[in-house]
Amino acid sequence: MKKVLIRCLFMVLAATCAGQVQHKTVPHSKTPASCVRVQDGAFHSATLDREMKYRVLLPCLYPSDSGRFPVLYLLHGLYGDYLNWDTRTSLERYAQRYELIVVTPDAGDSWYTNSASDPKDTFEDYIAKDLVAEIDGKFRTLRDRHSRAIAGLSMGGYGALKIALRYHGDFAFAGSLSGALNAPQDLGDKRPEFRDQLLKVFGPPGSVVRADNNVFSLLQNASTKDLPYLYLACGNGDAFLQVNRDFAAQLSSRGAAYEYHETAGGHGWDYWDRSVQDLLRAVAGVISKP
Image (cartoon, rainbow, N blue to C red; front, top):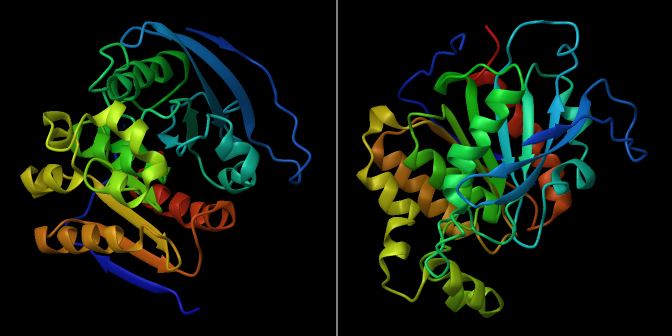
């Protein structure tokens, strides 16, 4: 299939200089040896009031270079966990090309949202506040907007765009692969198997939580100059294709800096393994070590 690329760039983002971690190397047999160092960590999230896990991929130069590095937060999908990106793709092999710290946090089936039904499940705050503070405190990161990115797949794609649109002062780049961008809207009607969890997270149709977490509304209400660089990709056989096209069209109408990729593929790991390679290249082009 011929690759379709729609790129719309109206502003240039300049790259600027800017718990308890369980240190261990995680062995892998599915990919060739990589110089990327893998560490698992856990910390007490103040907003969730519970221990949360994450995995960190440190760039090859991290042990020998005393400087600081940009960070990509990479979010998992529904029914997934913090290990998925590293164990189900060749992320380590792809990441070793870049001077970039990659963090894959755990978030359950939270939709990266502060729950409408359980006040303790403040998963948006956990990612945007607690996790960023944890990583900045434990690793040599470049601690500013221009050196921080967030992206994800499916549920994580929705979460990444939503968090970056709300916390636009904290992220220079937001990416979505196969994003379930209509989660607070009509996804429960289209996918009944998700309905119960969506009701738990977002409340009933017409709720304030649904309105507050609608990425189309967040984009519409944002000032264009405050938007991060936005990256969208979706397979042409994916059920979320139309909602991704709709969001790309809204980005175009707003004059946002973005790119949209539509290629062959469905909603699965073969597609995400291919697509994360282009995502990493795009991240490196926007946020890079000075």
